[in-house]
Amino acid sequence: MRLRRDWSYGALLLAGGALVLLGRSEPLSQNAQASPAEARAVVRGGRAEPSLFRLGSSFVTDDGKAITFADLRGEVQVLALIFTRCPSLCPTLVADLRRLEQRLPQRVAATTRFTLVSIDPEHDTPEVLRAYRERMKLGPRWTLLRGDLDSVRELAAVLGFSFGSDGRTPAVHSKLVTLLGREGQVLHQQAGVADDPERILALIAPAP
View 1 (cartoon, rainbow, N blue to C red):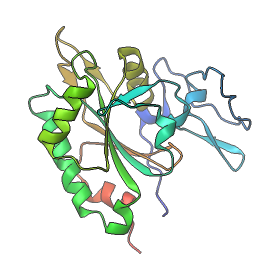
View 2 (cartoon, rainbow, N blue to C red; view 1 turned 30 degrees about the vertical axis):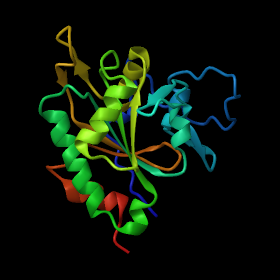
View 3 (cartoon, rainbow, N blue to C red; view 1 turned 135 degrees about the vertical axis):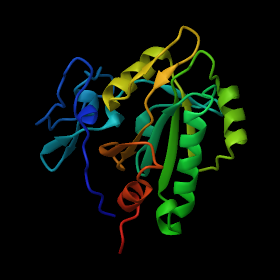
View 4 (cartoon, rainbow, N blue to C red; view 1 turned 60 degrees about the horizontal axis):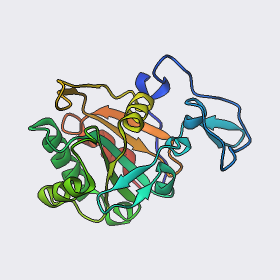
């Protein structure tokens, strides 16, 4: 499957203006601590591309399993940051993503996953995420993740996702949807799904 890379400004820059590392050909050792720039690099034929799989942060799924983003390797990921107490924007976004999933051809759906990461980790425990899965009728191809606040902020910075807080809940946030390749590289980003569903659908499932 050939996917077109459609970079946004936020996908290319880290918080503080650190650029994606280019030209690194050796992999990080298992015990090495990846820098923010290295966390975005995956080597392809002598050149590096951004990858979330270099992020060392650990997350917990809604069934209590600890994973890193590298554990998502091998399948296309449609990634969004949400929180379960969101009254309108997040439920609408998730519903739009569900409709997108339903439109995928079977051969493509089999190798595509949808990943939601909470930006409200203090409230969104694995139990709360599990209840959210049931409420939103999310199937087995969906992964719901909770990390500590530092891990969430790091991920948000790498993706160019902005959010703020009113002191109790994330009050202001964007509706960024990110498409990741099989090795964690950012292939495409757009604001939500509803305004341009055909664009992201065409990238996930290009016409034969």
